[in-house]
Length: 589
Image: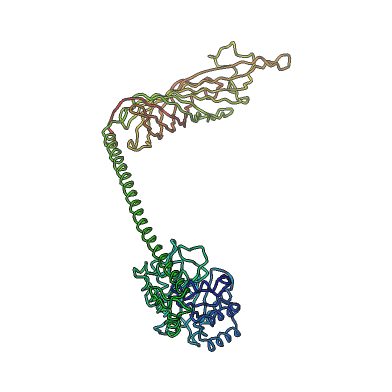
């Protein structure tokens, strides 16, 4: 296997770098590609490549450090590539918009100039892209869109895009590289890995970052490269050795790794280790080789255990999912069954209700509050006007003849009063009180009225026609007869003239009642609310008006003329009636 992207030159490996390299080789890693990330990492990157035959490097400026890119850096890269065959690529370069370490225009300029340098030197590029893959692909397309290659123009390292973005990268002649994040449970790369062409897929660790499961959270190293190959094999349903072989061949073609160096590495007897699956003759099994064999066996066993655990977890997950789906299906069926039974019960109740007669409102008792108004038609001779719009109460008894016709008797009353000091008990043309008044109460000279009350009580006999009997809110109009009794009560005191002076007499009261009758019209609305089989509660609001023109006349000196003024009566009221009765007409007919 070839780890096509690892940063084992960094300080995270200063304490055990050689041990990590040895363990990685024992685990089957034949070659390493170590990219630089900034100018300060160039020396360490070149040093590790020069000290190990199987380690190659790449030189470039990472987008986080794009401000460092200048002509001097460009000249150094050219010099190192011409003098050092171990510099296999330009990288890592690209765009990173996830962090705001460097302005976008500077990143883009450095990226473009390093691409141009790679084309000039004929080297592949190692691309880093994060939250910028579409813009990265557009820039790459400008430089490589019209070119063709069988080996590849470079590597999209630690690829994290979607399937369409992967296919576009491949179509531009690039390889796509995957690392430990493809083993995570929340990865979005499962289908992307599965769809990646076999001749364009690479594996890497990106050490020390993104350690694969079951080592997630630990320092990553090339030792774990086999776990990434194992995951790709699982996704593509291939043998892991086949994945190791094809990714190795892809990396060798892309980075032009020397076959001679690879052969020397694979079969040297003292300082190198065998690939997975091979076993050297016993004659060359030195202590180091035996330890390497044991490490390889341990790595293989760990891979097999991880594979078996994933297989079992996958089976268990499928079983749990099926059980959950079964439980959900059974629960849904139970709920559907309950809803079906409830729906059938509701439909049956509606059918029975349609057959059931509506309660015939035989007897109803109601009460209400409203506003009453009483005024004369012709009051031109009145000395003052009295407001009459006051609170009124009503009590009613009603019944129903049919669904559309009601009959109601109601008793209503209201009283109003006013300071009538400007009113007179007598007309200006009169010199004596009315003859029918109690003369014992008549003062010697004249009265001074102080207050007058008018108490109005009336019975109303109404026939009401319901306009829309099938509606929950029913509107109606009616016609009836109203009999009104009006009682006037006046408070006053008398005034006498004595020896040229004025003497106030005692306070007294005059009271007189008279009755009138007339035709009444009304309109209103109500709502029938069934409380049970035999009770209906009916809130209502209505307004009625009557023209009172028959009956007694009011006594002179009171509110209305003695000549018999017609009286207009209006009453707006709202209330509620409770009906009790028995079944009558059927519903919904």
